[in-house]
Length: 350
Image (cartoon, rainbow, N blue to C red):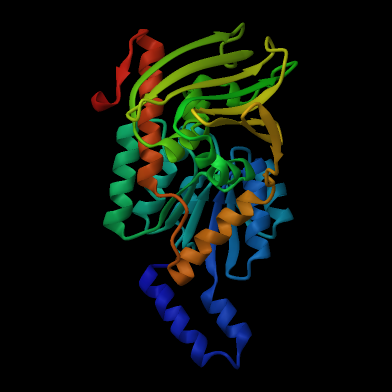
């Protein structure tokens, strides 16, 4: 469905108001979903709840699992994502599968004239991501890279209170997730997940959204791995120096040899601080600590899906651009190079 076709659908509403069933059949965006995991499930539920969309087909890695998933959501199971993107009766492809395949699926879907929603990252490679964004523009198709961390309660509360702490000079963002034992799944596979802070790009994107351009990047990583396909623990420590002079540390770890869970975001300014520890938030000023309310993290995939449909049907702006995600991907690439070389990486060289 092109944006021009969407305008035609809006015009049809006037002439079909007396026949709402015919209008809904004509106006629905026909969707193909790639993936059968947690994010895909939330996407499917969101689509079923929105009368503007019709989930037609689902593709996954294992046909048996795909068939069970598709049956649950009254859709057709496809043997491969390649078959799904080639279908002429699909307008929009949603990519909710392993990170390694994001770029290839997005490129193929756009080549076949589909709109695309893809969970971050758009691709594991910066050049590939740039090419896909250019392709979407050339095809005049919507390309939306999901970054629901920007819609969540923590990020919105940060934006609401951040001016109260004055000039910000230091930020620390830590997410540690112990897993005993670590699962043998794609998120613990180097090839399928990608470099930790590219695969988990939201850890960096929250910072670039709040604080702008990065000047230099340092990074160190360590993995515990006793079998060829999966690691048991991964730990990544990154330091960003922003052009504003702000210093930020990002700690991302998961697996068996980590023992204390942590989800903490600290902001230090010359007039106070903000600390978010789990689901609790605090404003610290003048030696006094005040609790602040933090909104929910629930329902964000549904909100993201609704906003994309609002964009397709009504032309409403989205909350993030592919270019913004691409910039953060470049920061992730800089962190990867820093971890591999032990050197400080300048963003101007990415």
